[in-house]
Image 1 (tube, rainbow, N blue to C red):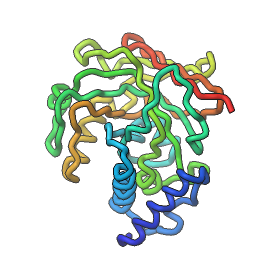
Image 2: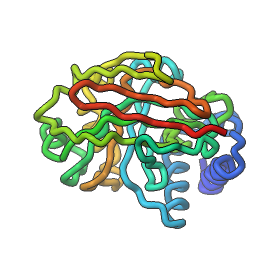
Image 3: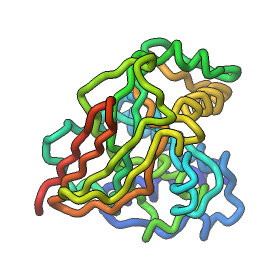
Image 4: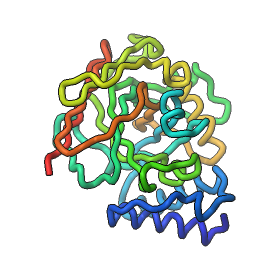
Length: 262
C-alpha cells in the first residue's frame, strides 16, 4: 500500500468510529496488503488520536490463544495501542453506544514498573520490568462489518481494540503462577466460560516478551506505568446493553464490567 492508500484506510476507520457504521473488510479493496501495511494504518490512526490529546497508556497483544485464533480465523498474534480514553472504571456504567460490535475477554494485565525495550528481551527481563498484575476485562470491538477480519483487517483496526476495565487488587508476580491461574467468566450471573493463563502462548509472560521484541525494532518502547494486555484466557463473548460481566481469577481477585441500559 502506498502512503495515499494507508491514509485513506485510516480515514475510513476513523469515520466508522464517528458514524458507528462498520466498513467492508479492508482486504477486499486491498488484496495485496501486508501485515506491515496494516501496522502503518494503525500508526496513522495513533498519530491522529494523540494529536487530539489522547495519550498512549499501553499495548495489547491480541489473538495469542488457540481459542481466539480459531474463533477469528487467524494464525498469529498481533498488537494494538491502548489510549487513555479506552480505560473504564470497574463497577461504573460503560456507555454501550460508544462501541459498534463489542465483545469481552478476560485477561491478566501487566503494569510495568521499568522500561522494556526489544529486541533481545528475555522472560527474566520481562519479570524484572513488571511492577504488578491485575485482573482485567478487555472490550474488543471491530470497525469491520460482521467481524469478517483477516489478520490485515484486525491489525489495521488497532488490533480490534475497544476498551479496558482493570480490577483493583494488585498482585506481585512472585505471588502467583500465571500459567495455572484459572478464570471463570460470568455474564449476568451465569458462567459462560472457564480458562487459564496457560492458554495465552503457554504463559501470559510470553506474550509480554513477544510484544517487547516485536515493537522494539519499530522504535516503540514499553514504558513504566504502561498497561499490557497479553491476550484472552477464553474465547470472546458478545456484549449487549445492560450486561454485567465478572471474571473471577482466584488469588488475583475479580474484575467487573457493567454496561449501561439504553
